[in-house]
Length: 351
Image (tube, rainbow, N blue to C red; front, side, top):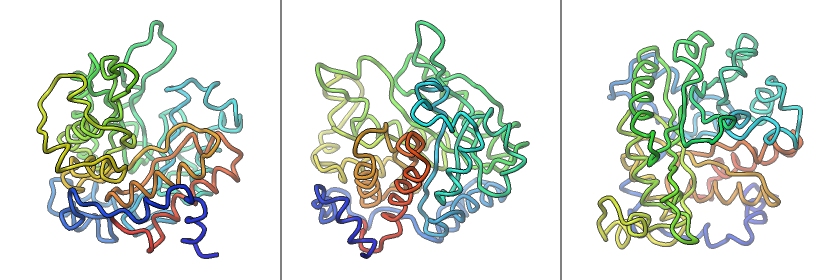
């Protein structure tokens, strides 16, 4: 069975996604991923030569090497969601080495994780797979918990451990977001000075973003603006949740919006909603990787669906964690490889 036939079988309930044509922002207006990505996008930017080398290292590793697409394993849930809750399903991942081994065995471009994990294994693996230090987190032991990200590590630590990139989260919309923007912008500037790439988790957090029974934390218009702010502080890659609805500005009744955002630049189709995120990334000049989401019963199909939406929208890949490490390693590798197959499959094209 060909790769495309296999994916068609997995996506049997989502066949319409494979046939959709985007009529909002057409593909000709986008900067699409490709083998020449670093040369084409960043060679005339303010990123120094060491940062260009680090970016190229990210795009030149694993099964997606030299395609312009990324498959990254993120494991910081031990802090963000508590270690027990995250690793109880598969306790081998209490041992940091297994996190790195999963990324390597699955052929990922890189692994993104905490200073603790990298600090205990960096000397053994920094030359074998690109490492990404996630330097801020929301810890869930303080009570009552707040929507805040605090610094757990320094940019110097990432440099000393041989990291190719650093990652951070900003909770846009939260009471603490302005401080986080300043902190992360300064950290990203230092990372670039030291020759490391930058990845920003552009998440929304505010109870007011839920209106009635509808949660607008994943609205295309609000997440798109978060992406635009992330590009503004010079994130090289942006991680965002896949959009599930739209009209956040209208429902929450704040901020500025144009009706054309909804009539001309997006539609209800999942690919069009994701394309609105892409255009807020400077029409794709800053790569969009969508998150894989929580683990559930149909992880393989859901991961493949997310990858198809991201790729056909003009995105750059997936950063998938819980769907992989909360399963036996063999199954986790299969899910990651299936996602990678979407990006390697020539029959799945830009919508």
